[in-house]
Structure formats: C-alpha cells, structure tokens
Image (cartoon, rainbow, N blue to C red; front, side, top):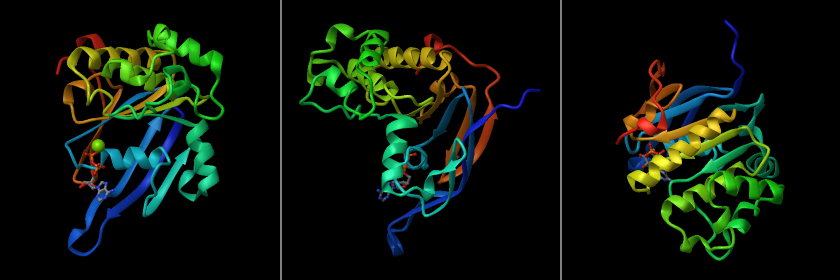
Length: 234
Ligand SMILES: Nc1ncnc2c1ncn2[C@@H]1O[C@H](COP(=O)(O)OP(=O)(O)O)[C@@H](O)[C@H]1O
Ligand SMILES: [Mg+2]
C-alpha cells in the first residue's frame, strides 16, 4: 500500500490553564497525525480540548510542551515573526463565529491577509456563491453567508491545509449543510481539512475520526462509511 504523506504531526502535547485549584488540563499528552488530502474530524464533547488542539496547530496559542511538525518544521520552536508567516501562508482557519471585520466589505475581508490575491479572491467568492455580495458589509449577510466569506478568506493563501473549529456551530441546519457541502467540495479539490465538532453526525463525513475526552485522545479510527454532506442530518 502506498504510504500517505504526513502533513501535520503533533507529538505529546500538553497544555494547562490556570494554577492551584483553578488548574485545568486542556491537553494531556495528545499526539495526532494528519495525512495529506484527508478530511479529518476531531470529535468530542464541550471542554474536551478540541479548540485548544486546533489553536495550537494553527499557531494561535502556545503549548506547554510537545512538538507540532507541519510539513516537517516544528512550529512550537517558531518565534513570533515565524509564527505570523506560518499563519499567513501555511494554514487557513475557519472559526465558529466567522471573525470577519465588520467595517470593511466582503471583498476587503477576503483580501486583507498580506499575501492574499485579488484575482483569487474573486474566484473564491464565485466558488462560495457570493460574488454578487462582494461589496456588501458582513452585517448585510446571513450567518451562513458570512461563514462562506470566512471560508473564502481562509482559502485565499497558498496553504493546502484548512482548519475549521465548529464551522456550523453558529448556523441553522440549512446554512450549516451548505457550509458542509462547500467543505466537501474543497476537500475533493485536494485540500487537507481538519474539522473540530461536537456533533457525531458531522463526523460521518470524515475519512478519519479522532475522538477526544478530558484533554486526551481516546480513539482514532478510519471511517469505513463516509457519507456525503448532503446526507448529514443533525
Ligand atoms: N484561555 C483559557 N483559560 C482557561 N481555561 C481554558 C482556556 N481555554 C480553554 N480552557 C479550558 O480548557 C479545556 C479545554 O477547552 P477547549 O479546548 O476550548 O475545549 P473544546 O473546544 O473541546 O470545547 C476546558 O476545560 C476549558 O475550560
Ligand atoms: Mg471548542
């Protein structure tokens, strides 16, 4: 069997918040691998450590110990400048609450990241079905539309990796499904997707499902019954 290339390897990650009686373990000796072109879901209940793990992989927060190799480089060792470049170039991030800037237009949001490309922004806005909204402000769009703008923004870089933290968590079912279909299409175009969710049904879309509980990975399984976004019901 052909060996798949590992694009992300997190090794023995630990993260503790607070101290004394307020000590909370967010990650306890967490190790995961992400393979090129896969759709990986990290599934777990609220507080299990999913967002912490994704934020660490996205270079948005620091682990207490461990390694995070992305395309072979340990981002834990990066200085602030290297981390900024990493976030700009190597990973796209989609948040539960979109995180768009409200005082600039859709097009400006999608082209704000240094190194993003104006022509590609238009192509991406067409792909997410919002080219006609490019000069609107985020508040003039529905939640589902705002999330699609956020996805276009995350894709407007040369990165092959898309990290999504509960991307349907703030959406109604129909908008959530539209976002899942969009992610499915992006995956089919060859992107590597890591999606965090607490919703079991969404996990059925994934090639592989890693389950977290109490700051630990408790299972890591290939999904033998991948379903289409269209079939996901929750
Ligand atoms: N900035 C923080 N300060 C203190 N505790 C935090 C912080 N971020 C996360 N935690 C705690 O770490 C644990 C894991 O949180 P999180 O990764 O957000 O879980 P999930 O995304 O699975 O809901 C929780 O107990 C949470 O309360
Ligand atoms: Mg979370």
